[in-house]
Length: 225
Image 1 (cartoon, one colour):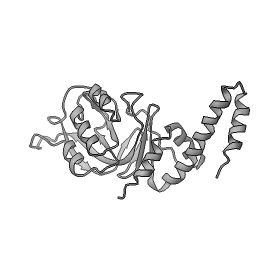
Image 2: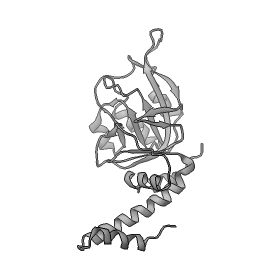
Image 3: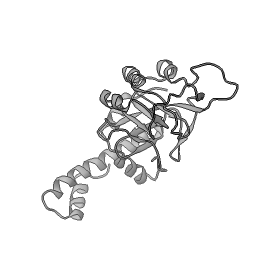
Image 4: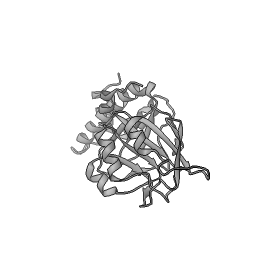
């Protein structure tokens, strides 16, 4: 799949609230993850990238070998620049799906961030690296003795939303939105207009203008295209 890095750059400038509102305005199904992994640091960069998925399950009784979770091999040879590594371990919180060095390797390779439906470790290191990480918590226990990867670039479900390989994922301090790539340009166009309206409203509110009047004036200044 072709990666549109300019599209990702544009989405990194748009809050998830504006994106959600744009999808509603376009009568598209919500892509907002509910009861989902959260940003480990509300000040971390906004994450925008294409989903590269990894589905993991408890290690089967007959499975042999030490490194069956395959995080590193996916980062090294499957994920591409601009991708978000999506690791679905079913939300379990007794095992982590990586640490600081793994995140650093992903950053060096050009990945846009991690969405972990489970836990992570070395959180402070990841935050210091400025690498976007969304997970359900932290725990020191490594995954290799307990988990195995059963699917790479397969469909997963996190927070009530189906995520397919190549879907566009945007995450920030408010939450995570999954965007079908075929709708991405339309959603971006509407979301950018919503952001401009809200920015102008903020300026007007600070002058003492009534909220309703602020919205009317701002929307008039930035008409729908």
